[in-house]
Amino acid sequence: MKANAVKRAAFGFLATVALATSAMFVAAPANAAPNDCVAGDACVWKDSTYVTNGSNTAYVRFASGIPDIGTWQYKGTSIWAKGANSPKSVYNHGTQQKIRIYTSLDYKGTYVQIARNDGDGNISNSVGVVTASNFPGKLRSARFVA
Image (cartoon, rainbow, N blue to C red; front, side, top):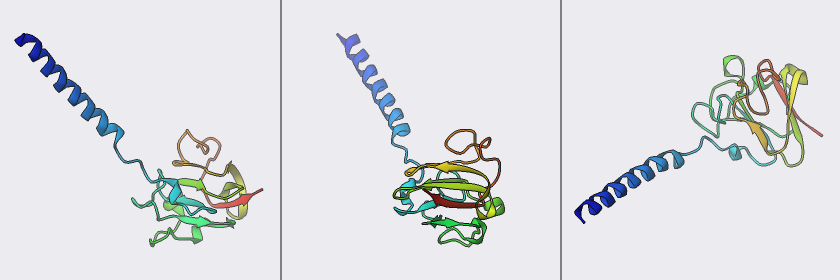
């Protein structure tokens, strides 16, 4: 009888540890939600996972287009969206349209189209809507298209 009680206690302890361990992984907060991008706009962030220096609200947003993203600063920062600080995340929170992001100024160069309510949390890796192979460069301009 005593052996069964010890087994039950050991099983209970292991189950508690397993549950606590899995909760640590499940309950971890997600990275910034692209929902922080204002409805009707598209947004870009300096870093992957929809953040700029740890802030999910420090983005450049646009409602129609930006022919030179490098002339804009990320909201609430003094960081210009160019060079090493070029956007690494993009999200289209527009109402009806797609956006195109371009590797050159003035909506020229290679582009990738992103559907409404879609985006890519890391445009420089090999997964997602935008990949290093279909977008070989920095994001320099972007606009909504029909």
